[in-house]
Image 1 (cartoon, rainbow, N blue to C red):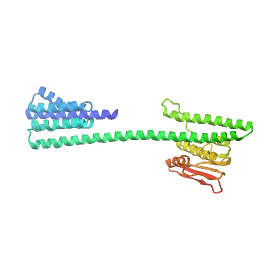
Image 2 (image 1 turned 180 degrees about the vertical axis):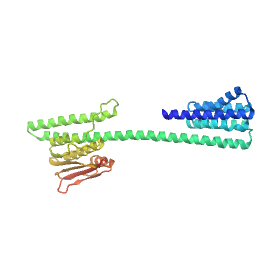
Image 3 (image 1 turned 135 degrees about the horizontal axis):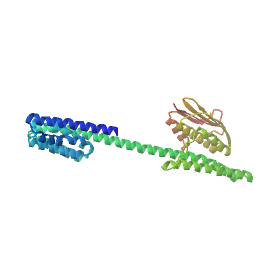
Image 4 (image 1 turned 90 degrees about the horizontal axis):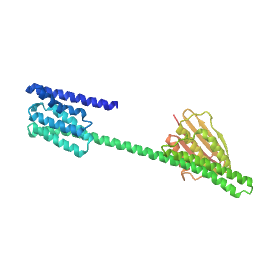
Length: 355
């Protein structure tokens, strides 16, 4: 608002200065009466003050008033500089705010009008064309630049929306893959055990895991709704629950996470998803097994180390799990490695800088 007010004040100042110059030229060179000078100067200059509101109207009034005062011999031909300045202001605004057809029409009309009242000589026509043409080129170039900036802004907004939707899709993949893996393991256990107690326990784990998955999915899908109540993103505080779920699926998890660590929300979410995906892989490929989850938080970075004592055979780079972990780490310029451990099993190590 303040910036617009500043621009309008500049236009008013320009209109007043041009009006004073036109009136002075009328009085000094031809000694015209004030009752004739004031209306003529006002019609030439004052429309400049509202050129941003009505650019075409301003250009038309300023041009016609200039032609009228020169033909009526109220303003001498040699004093056309100030009126042409008013026309330039208006023509620039038309070139910026209106289509190319409108601005070119304004350029042609103003060149013909100013060269006509100044004698119609070729030299005058060329000078008028050069001056007004330069003003038109500057205005039209400004229009193109603004249009380009608007397109870039729109594209950036669309890209941000696409990135956000992709992030949600990855979050959904992590949630579904992790919880369905647990459900699949427990369903397999329930199908093979003969003890009703073990079958009931497997069904209880399936029930709890499916409810947790649905809750997370509703939270993620709610991001797409403007009226959704957004729950906080999972972070380091949710790792204990992940360990408990994996333990229910037959993976003995030892978790070492600093309880009072504070990290940025995005980093915390990435750590949570990396551990979630790593535990999912342990459940799918190594259960029953033991697994150690170590999270170290320093002022500069968060280091995640997930190691199991399973067979250690994985297909690296296949599917979205390891690729998704690498991408999450790459966002923060960190390091990531995944492969067989030195003493067997499989190990995932990630370091995410947060300063």
